[in-house]
Amino acid sequence: MTVKVLRPGLLTTLQDYGRHGFQRVGLCPGGAMDKVSLTLANALVGNALDEAALEMTVIGPEILFEEDTLVAVCGAEFQSSFPHNRPVLARKGTRFNVGRAARGARAYLAVAGGFAVEPVLGSRSTYLPGHFGGLEGRALKHGDVLLLREPQAVERFTSLKKTKDATVKWSARPLTVPDREPILVHVIEGQHFASFDSNSQRAFFDTVWSVAPDSNRMGFRLSGPPLGRPEADEILSGPTCLGSVQVPPSGVPIALMADHQTTGGYPRIAEIASADVARLAQLAPGGKVHFAKCSLEMATELRRDARERLNAALRGIAWEYQRK
Amino acid sequence: MPLGDSAAYIEFSTTLDLEVNNVVQRLALLILKQKVPWIRDVVPALGGVALHFDPDHEGFPAEPLEAALEIVNGSLKESLEMKDDAGREVELPVCYEPEFALDLKEVAKKAQLEPQEVCQLHEAGEYRVLMMGFAPGHAYMGGLHVKLAVPRRASPRAVVPAGSVAIANEQTVVYPYAISGGWNVIGRTPRVLFDAKRSRPSLLWPGDRVRFRAIGREEFLELEKQK
Image (cartoon, rainbow over the protein chains, first blue to last red):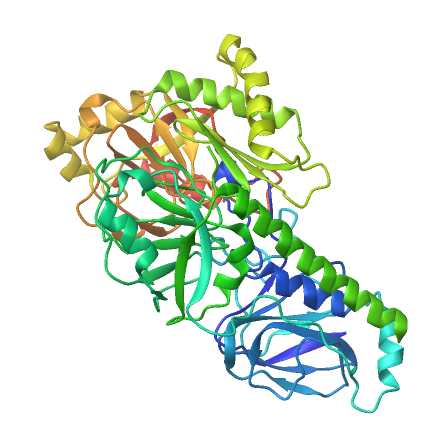
């Protein structure tokens, strides 16, 4: 079983839930920018929820299915003829031209069985700065041929084969794609919040920030009025995590994303609630965001709510399949 | 203190204190040994230790900060009493020849030393990995001679060659691969600092004691061939 890459798109990489346990030697977990959408795509094709899928960014690829393949695309809405958020049987010879993202920035294409690449340090995620993981540690390019593993959910496969348009009438509701911008992202105060002057503190929450063009999987640079330096200028380098918002000397905040550095020497003004990271990941360059302060308790509550929404969606998918 | 809602940072010092860092290193190892299922990463930093949680783990406690603090306190006493034997000893060959020592002249000028003296002082030092970060395999090592404590370059280099040995302030680092950086490059090692295909991907680990050994151009090229 293979798929062939006819056009790679802007940045198409294999990503799963990432690799853990190596942050103490400076390796971040990485993995999908929007793990919620990845999870849904895997559930739709009957994979383990943490299976690796293709993360497609802003401009999607064109791929050719060389055998009948069960696929699902979740996350950003791309201009393509392919239905999103549902299992689709891509028949042998189908060309899937993904086009441009119309809403959101990243979508995940999962195939039943998963992609046949060897895990590196326990994960199939592509880590671009280190040139390892995924397909040869790089983004897809023209002419790549991706091997697939044997699908698990054979029943789904055969039932879809009998349908006229090779898909189902139901779909999974997208959970992370913004309806409108600016999106609201909750943050708790970062370790160095108090050392910023009150103008900077206020500006951080009053500003509608825009994702700068030089943002990437490591971090989103946020364009807006530069923030003033904190009073205690020199801080001791310390740990960072997914969603840390650092303020370098330029005053332009950087939100750390999946491939972030594990330690940093810039003051951290805020930490993004983990429930909101996947939604932030759906902003393309130019996308608008503003921040609302919340307590640790509320961030915890938001995380539980988000988990419950995802679980409900997963139950919904399982129910549809049982119903047939 | 919380580090977002899925991690905690337990800080012991806001300034660099090598004694505190020693305790942090031992503490991190003791916590790792416990293999707490809902703690995914234990990261010793310069002045404290960060614990990264797996909030979806079934054993994840309702009050993770309290639970984390309890784990830290449980190991703190032991780490304070432990003898200083947590780190391994690692020797890194370094070639200080001019083609690799891009900033040696500059450093010598700032430190008011001869270039040769800079290399000798650097080689004579006993270093300790205080924290890792910036890139996989990139270790911040303390123990640099005070005479060599020069500031970082005014403008960072777009690309520092892989294996570059560099200094700034009172620390030394080795760049694991070609990457942008602002430290003063005074030599290069032929060793591979990080290789994801190795079972222990990183050559250096937090708490390691590191010595540099000066090598000539020929030995450098010979070792590089063995990569």
